[in-house]
Image (cartoon, rainbow, N blue to C red; front, side, top):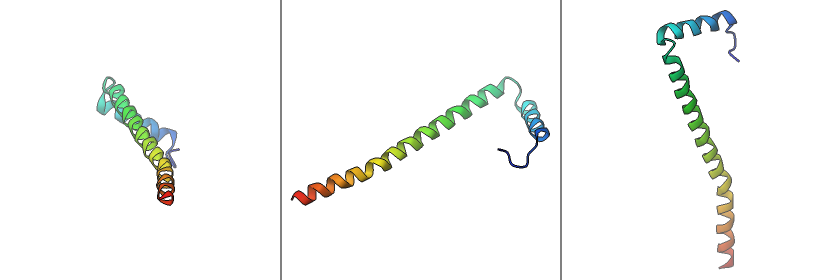
Length: 68
């Protein structure tokens, strides 16, 4: 997942984050990150739904033009 980063490096990074932000701030940061990821996924789903609906709109317009 992390490429060439080993367990020792991950532990070191986590310790630095703990020292910089403190134990009380980390859950707030994680919560904000989770909300951001959730919103991003929601936006992605909405765009995918729009893309899937677009061919249907084009087909219905084509059919209505053929009837005229």
